[in-house]
Image (cartoon, rainbow, N blue to C red):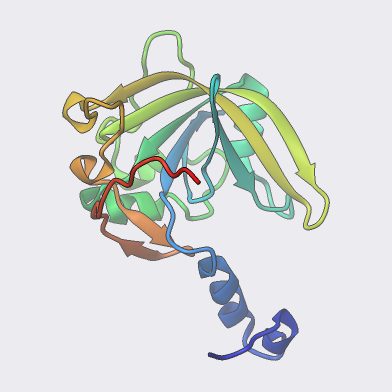
Length: 201
């Protein structure tokens, strides 16, 4: 085993250090986040976390505001956003939405998708996604340790392939063909291994 302290990497290439710490927490589920500003906006995020089920809350981390954060600004301005799962067939276009487009450029248009809207929800969806959620902004927290923003939203609407929900209520992500990501650009396929019983002492 190699013993590493963060200061050991300071002399290494900056991109090496970023890749190391971005992938340290393991593989996660990416989502395309749809918002509406001057145009339909779409960005790829891998920092979505479960907060609670009653009410259903999800959190999302935004990097420091050293550059304009269009997704965050749009959410704070109109209060709504969408989460759209990524499948293997969508990887290339989903990844392209992470590029730094100008505020008035639509990522939907850039990748050749048409924004999909549902009644009374002002944020756009990715119609090709098999799991789509509409969320309403709840609260924002400033993490002073590194100047990031933790945003909390409540899930208000869900669209999902019914075959991907089992009798216990579990969403079967392998059935949905959703993929995983490590860091910013390493994508993995998903395979369910097992269900374990509720752990008791």
